[in-house]
Image 1 (cartoon, rainbow over the protein chains, first blue to last red):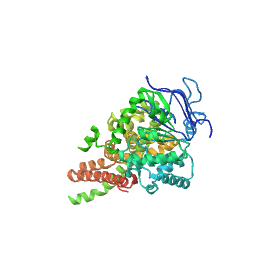
Image 2: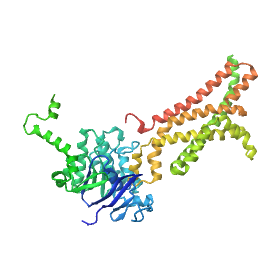
Image 3: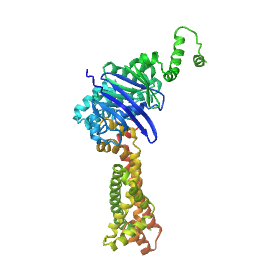
Image 4: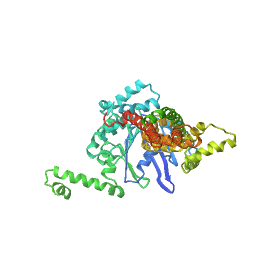
Length: 281
Length: 218
C-alpha cells in the first residue's frame, strides 16, 4: 500500500461572494479508507466533497488527487490559472461520484445510464461497455432491470443504479453525497447494504451522511464539520464514544436519545418513554 | 354554388402549394436558425446574453408585417433585391427564429442541472453532453411547442398576400373580387388553413407518441 493519499486537502477554502463556506480544510484520504463527513446543515461538508472533484472550484489552498494538483496550474494563493476542462477531467478520472438526487439520465435505459460514461469518456467499445455495465448492475442486484427506464424504478433502486454507474468506471475512490437523504425510510437500508458490500471489498470512499449509526459502524475516520471548519476528526470510537468537543456532543445528543428510547422496550421493559407511549396510543 | 366551388378548387390547390412552400421553408430555416442561436447562446453565455436579448426583443416587439415590408421594400435600397416569395421566406424565417430560439432556450432549461454535473463528473465532454444528454430531452420537451410555432408560421404566411405572393389568402381575395361571392371562397380558405395546421398538429402527436422515454408504460 502506497503511503501517498489518494485525495489530499491542504488549507482548502471556498467563498460564495462574501460568504466563506470553507475556512481551511485539511484532510488525507488513504487508499482503502472510508471517511465520513458529518455535521449540521450548512457546515460545508457537501461543498468540501464537491471540491474534491472540482464540481465546485475551491479558491484557497490545494487539493491533490494521487499527487496531481486538481483544477489549477500552480499552488499560489490568489489569481491562479485554471486548468482546461480536459485536464481537470483527466486528473479526476480515478474519482467517481454518487449524488443525493441520483442524477440519472431519464431518457436512457438503466443499462445505458451505466454504460454511457464508459463509451463517451473512457472510449470503451460499445459491446464491452454493455458487458461491464451489466456486471456493475449485478453488483447492486439490478441486472434484471437493465432494459427499463429509471423513472420506472423506486428511489432506492434508482440510487443503486447511481452506484452501479459510479462503479462501472472502475474508480479508485468514490464520493457519496448524502446517498440516502432523498429516500423513503424503508428504502434506505437496501442502499446502505450496497455501500456496506463495497466497503467490504475495500473500496475507498468519502461520504457525507446523516446516518449516524451507519457512519459509526462503517467508517475508518469520521470528520465532524461545523461552520466551514473541521472541528474533530478521528476513528468512530473517538467521535461517537468519548468526544471532548462540546459542539459534537450537542450534535450527537438527539441521535443518542433516539437510540436509547428505541432500545428501552427491547430490554423487556414496558414502554416508559413519551415517544413510545405516543406511538402506542 | 357547389359548381362555383368546384371550378375554383384548382386555383386553391395551387395556392395551398405556395402557402406550404413558403411556410415549410420558413419554418425549417427558422428552426435551424433558432437552434443555432440557442446553441451559441449556451456556448458563449456571457458575451452573447446582450445581443441575444436585443434580437429577441426587437423581433418579438414589432409586427411581422412591418418586418416583411422592411425586407421587401427597404432592402432594395441597400442593393438587396428579392422576389416576393423570397422576401416572405427570409422575413418569416427571421421572425420565427426568435420564437424558436426561445423555445429551445426553455427546452434546454428544462434539463436538470444535476444531470449535467453527473455527466461532467464522469468525464463526458461538453459537446457530448450537449448531444447525448441535453439534445434528446430538450427535443422531446420542445416538440409540442415547435409544432405550435410552425402553426403560427403557416397562419402568419397569409400576411404575404399584401406583397402579392399567390398564396391562399391572396388567391381567395382574388376570387372574391372577381366573382362577388364571399361565403364559399372564404369558407374554403378557412378549411384549407385548418387542414394544414391540423396536419402539423397530428404529425407532432405521432412523433411524440413514438419517443420511448416519454411512454407511460414500458
